[in-house]
Length: 212
Image 1: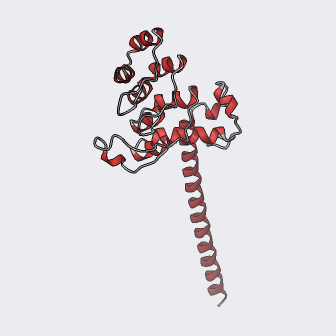
Image 2: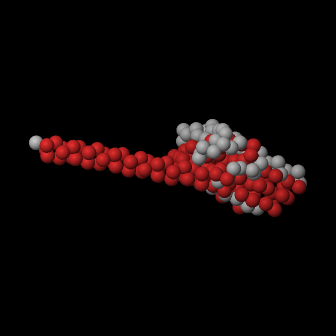
Image 3: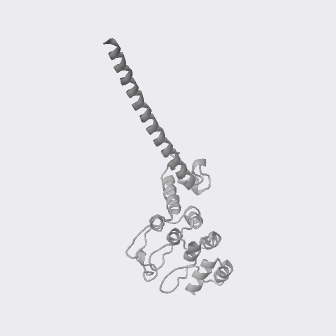
């Protein structure tokens, strides 16, 4: 059943999923009324191995539940960075999709009316590390990583990423530290210049007084 599939994904029961697959059953069966599948359950619990099994056996990793949420959105909402990384980097899921509604309103009232991407859901739930990973990844695919190093999406997808982008989160963190250091250095230079100007005015004033 669809509910059974979801629970198998949730608990990481790959043996049950493999049995279903061997019998010709669909790994994309959704729980009636909710539409959540094995991939949604695995993403919710951060079960990377189960997600790899599903992806490797033809499951739809962009599949939507009845609210239009993808497994990536579920990983983002529950703060599962490993699952999000696997879905984005290995499965190549679409990170731009937004949910279309919310059939879980009675359970999660705070979700009502929100139409967000996975990264936005991560921010909404306070899982900034998941949102930052997706932002850094998108920046990298656009041709430049968060440190300004040239990089291509093809290199990343093939596993041949340049050193600074091997971990987008680390790269983003390093960029933030560098920016903070630059800001402090700039403030220190401004303060030193101000003191120098004050000292110059004082010496000039003393010289003028001596001449009188």
